[in-house]
Length: 621
Ligand SMILES: *[C@@H]1O[C@H](CO)[C@@H](O)[C@H](O)[C@H]1NC(C)=O
Ligand SMILES: *[C@@H]1O[C@H](CO)[C@@H](O)[C@H](O)[C@H]1NC(C)=O
Ligand SMILES: *[C@@H]1O[C@H](CO)[C@@H](O)[C@H](O)[C@H]1NC(C)=O
Ligand SMILES: *[C@@H]1O[C@H](CO)[C@@H](O)[C@H](O)[C@H]1NC(C)=O
Ligand SMILES: *[C@@H]1O[C@H](CO)[C@@H](O)[C@H](O)[C@H]1NC(C)=O
Image (cartoon, rainbow, N blue to C red; front, side):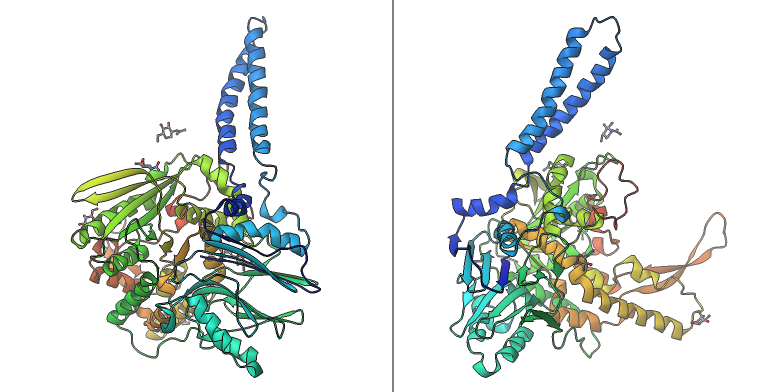
C-alpha cells in the first residue's frame, strides 16, 4: 500500500521543505511516531490495572468507613492514600508519555490552516508505506508520498515526467503491459507521451485504460489541472477537502469535513472540482455464463494478484487471507493454495476474535474462530501433499487492547463515524496488525504445531469482499423472495429476479462507500495492502452476467411440526447458490452450507462495552 497526500494552495506553498526518507530508519520512525503516539499501550494498561486495584480498595474502604469505633483509622488512611496515588498514576502516565497523546475523537480535532492540516496528516500517510517517504514542493503544490514496495524495480514517488506531469499512485495495475514490471513507471511512461495539444483528453483516456485497484493523483503543471480519483470500483481510499484557496487530497482524512471520492474521475481546474464517470463502467458480458467460466475467471483474478507480489519469496509468508472460515474466503484460500502448489509457500489465515466483557465471551469462542479452525484443518489436509502450508493465525483481542486502539481506529476510518463502522473497522485493524502477537498453528500430519508470539510477515492480504454483492449473500437479497408461493405466477417471479439483479448492480456501485474506503484506511496503517479477487473487473462482468436464478434459488419442502402433523409446505431459499456449487466442485463440501455472518458478529467486535446492549449500528460515536 502507498500513501497519497497533496495540497494545492493558490498563492503558493511556503514553509514546507522537500525531503526523502528510505527504509526503516530513525527518521522514518519519527514520521510514524506521530501516528503511533495515539496508541497508549503501556500507560493505558497501567490505568486498567490500577482501575481493578482502585475498585478493590474502594470496596474495602466502604466497609471500614462504616466502622464508627475508629478501630480501622490507620487502614482507612492507607486505603485513601492508595486510591489517590493510583488515580494520579493513571492520569500521569497518560499525560506524561507524550504531550499530544490524549486521544481526541476525530470529529473534534481542531482545524488549522491548510499547511498545518497537510503536515498533521503526514504521519498517517507515512505509516501506509514503510519503504519510502518523500515530500516535494512545486510552486503551489505540496506533495507527500509513502511507498510499500511490492513491484520491481523500485520506483520513487511523486514522479515527475519530462512533459510536466506529477504522479502519485497507490495501487496495483493488472494491465497486460505491466504485469512483469512496475506499474507506477508504466503510468509515467504513458503520461510522458501524451501529445501537448490534447493533454486533458490524454489523461482521461489513460485513466480509462487502467485496470486494477488504485487511487491516483496526477498534476498537470503546465495547464494547472489536477486529476484524481479511485478505480472503477473504488478499491483504494481517497478523499478531499476544499476550502476557499486550497484543496487537500489524501488517502486518509482528519474528520467528516472531508469528502470521500466516488468511483469516478475528478478534475480540479480554476478552483472548481468536476467529476465524470469511467467509460464502459461495469458492462456485463453478453453471454450465458457457465460454472467453468466462473471458475476460470476467478482463478485468473487470484493468479494475477499473486504473481505480481515481488520478490517472490516463499518463506516466511508473503501473503495472507482475511479469514472467517466461511464460503467466500475459503474458496479464495483454496485457489491461492492451488496457485502456489509445489512452491513451498506458506499462507497465513488471519482470524480475529474479541473478548467481550459485556456478554463474558472469550475471543477463542467467537463463532468465526470455530469455523476458521474447521476450514483451516480441511484446507491443510487437501494441500498436505503439495508443499503448501496453511498457518492458522489466531488473534485474540482483549478488552484492554480494544480500548487502547479504539481512538486510533476512530481517527483512521474518518469520515465514517458510526458504531457499526467502528465494530467492522476494528476487526480488520487487528486482523491486519502483525505487531500484535498471535498464535500460529500448523497441521503436520494429524498433529497441530503451535507457535506463540507469531507475527505475520505477509504484506499482501486477500479479502473475500464482493462475493456477497455479486452473488446475493445478504438477507436483504433473500427478503425480495419471501412472498413467493407455490402457485406464484412466472411473471411475478421473473419480476423478483429482475429486482434482485438491480439490487446487486447497485450494491457493487456503492461498495466503495459502504466498505472499501473505510477498510483500506484502517488496514493500510500497518503497511499492508488488501487485494480483492472477487472485485476484479473481468470477474465482475462474468458474475453480473450470471442468471440471477442461479444466485438465489427457491424450493418448497414439507415440514412436520407438533401443531401440524400432516406437514406444512415451507419456502426454502439459498443465497449465493452458484458460489456454493463452485465450492462443491472444488471439494470444499464443508463450507457449502455455511450461512453469512457479518464480521462484527462473527468476530464479536460489536457492542463490547457494558451498557451497550441497546446500541444501534447507526449511532454516531
Ligand atoms: C465469565 O466466564 C468465566 C469462564 O469463561 C467464568 O469463570 C466467570 O464466572 C464468568 N463471569 C460472569 C460474570 O459470568
Ligand atoms: C472437514 O472437516 C470436518 C470436521 O471438521 C469433517 O467432518 C469433514 O469430513 C472435512 N471435509 C473434508 C472435505 O475434508
Ligand atoms: C487465543 O485463544 C486460544 C484458545 O483459548 C488460545 O489457544 C490461544 O493461545 C489464544 N491466543 C492468544 C494470542 O492469546
Ligand atoms: C402476481 O402479482 C400481482 C400484482 O403484482 C398480484 O395481484 C398477484 O396476486 C400475484 N400472483 C401470485 C400468484 O402471486
Ligand atoms: C462513509 O463515509 C462516506 C463519506 O462521508 C459516506 O459516503 C459513506 O456512506 C460512509 N459509509 C458508511 C458505511 O456509513
